[in-house]
Length: 256
Length: 256
Image 1 (cartoon, each protein chain N blue to C red):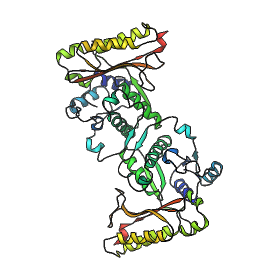
Image 2 (cartoon, rainbow over the protein chains, first blue to last red):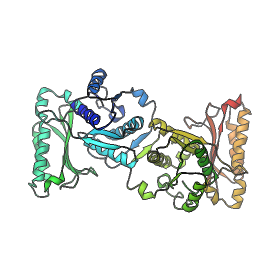
Image 3 (cartoon, one colour):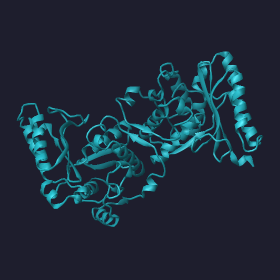
Image 4 (cartoon, chains in turn yellow, brown):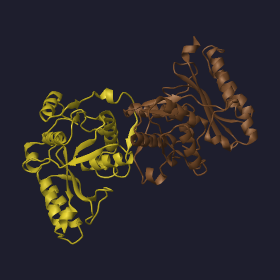
């Protein structure tokens, strides 16, 4: 997207370490913003981003103008099922926009490995599904979310937080960790609902408006009230006008 | 699709002459058939097709089972505008099915050049739009329609024609040629409508039910009542239960 932060830069450094040549796309994609979303005010600073990418060892920065990527009403890619819930519910056309631009970028760059950050977990799942369904010849590498020292997931949108909001924002991750701990300790046996409901209530009482906080099956993205093989806890919550998302993946191997 | 005929075989021979290695897909694609269309009775003969492809110099015949290509409700590709009219009107989900399977095949085979027959002109236009919109790294080569000695365009569906129907079927191409001649001679000045209406009437009086017969702009696929730069005359007509399509491209350079 753009407005590179440490999360992006670590993706670039990892890619540089693991591959021969790194291409980074810098493109604020209009088709993944809905009506009334922050496309026009989304932070942009090409010069700064180019310098940061260069310092991270990036070989090619691909920053096309919008009219070059979308010269007309164009072909779109639709990923079913895993786009229906969560971010797909709040932002109905978002993931078609994501899938389409990522498909275009893959065809232009033709990477052997494509790196994405775990922070946008549903996006990773959607892209994984698209790659598999359309037989795209590449591997995905999902990298752990990079966090501020207090646990807040790095995001271009964090700059919108007031200082009061910024102070309380790390509670999202703290609640995720608390859920993870209590779920793996089986505080309520197999039932995870009381645990996530508690966390939801805590966040709400701190002034968050919680869009969702749930355990999901990462294959279907469906909510589960008990632990499954490939599970994650996902959250989206608003502080003032800023919407924050985060997640933790539950490593089932470590539950035993 | 399958049930290879001389049209397919000439595509294969041309590809063999022009490229290093030829991969042919043989796949009757369920997602491009609508309800009540002839998916289950579409002619299939893998052994014969494999032998014919081999004789035409094909290096790889890719004939996957349906469940391997569509293990679940899967990602689809939608091409707008050029899928709305003509075949898209009669078969509303057809071109999404075509675009999706072709996208998958392109990603699996990764051709440098992909060969298609002009007979399915709107399909060629749809695929061309998809390739351009999604920045697919390949070239399309559209090859002229191969015809029986009496002019009937070769098609897997011709086997469904009764002998009476087979005898009258070549009239479709004869009317296309008549239209082409009269349009390039400007029989009615700039107005092509009387010419194509005449041909429509002739076909109807011979027992055809004409779905459409029109001059179109090949960029938009929209009907035009006067000659445009990239024009084609397209026709779809039914004889009994068999639906035949055909087209001629008008070479503007030769109009002068």
